[in-house]
Picture 1 (tube, rainbow, N blue to C red):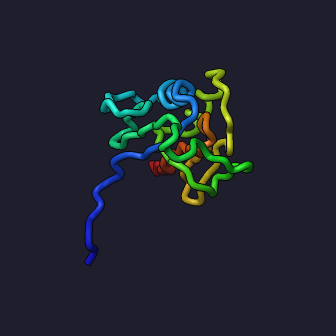
Picture 2 (picture 1 turned 135 degrees about the vertical axis):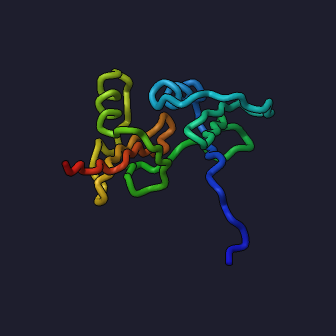
Picture 3 (picture 1 turned 90 degrees about the vertical axis):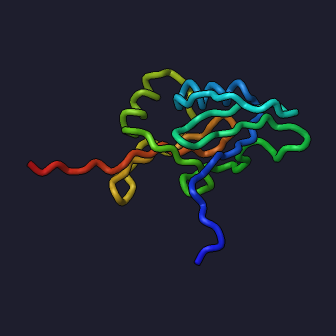
Length: 139
């Protein structure tokens, strides 16, 4: 018997160096919606990603350091994964957008058939975009 029962992820907090650059990444590229944020004593922004909130905190003297400082980025390091309807289509849209991207891995299949893309946000946090495996239709 477990001591507690977790229901869902409420929010993820990311410390950033440039709030405007991060806002563009999460709003304009990933299509999240900015939502109201309490009047904290430090700068930041909140975004809605499905049922999960993404809290950005501008790096300051009482926060942790911004970003992922690893010199090599990998798909097998700490990352956030977001579900998208079609990762291949998202890839095509990103390529056509002209937005400068730091691509860690272009679309690839997971062993179960899901499609994954890995990007780095403006501070180097690894962001995965994934779509479910396509179901074969048998007529």
